[in-house]
Length: 138
Image 1 (cartoon, rainbow, N blue to C red):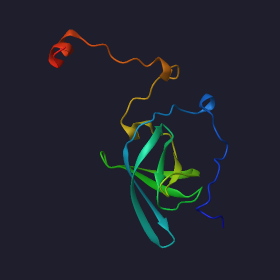
Image 2 (image 1 turned 120 degrees about the vertical axis):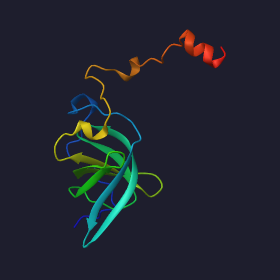
Image 3 (image 1 turned 180 degrees about the vertical axis):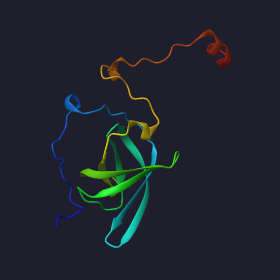
Image 4 (image 1 turned 90 degrees about the vertical axis):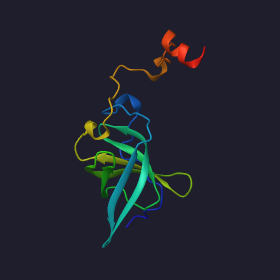
């Protein structure tokens, strides 16, 4: 039985170029539920990144690669079963955990994902409109 506290490299590491869906770096509240033997656990966390296929987050509860857990969106009460696909040591005694939905579920996050040809470097800040400038006293 592998040590669940040891960092484990992802199976089939994917680069940005060959990902199945775009990742969006966003901190969204989630609840993770699972079982440790006969006992259940529940932990609140924040995502570091989300995609149509799952998310990356940090947990203090020990999980193992291949284990199934339930992720809950506390805003909508939606639940999805996920597989732990990635583990790496993180800061503050928490482990960075990659979770993959059993089936793609982009609507779970209630956000719009950028198009495939979107380049984050092209992101521009909105220009000030006269109406906004007047409210700011500029």
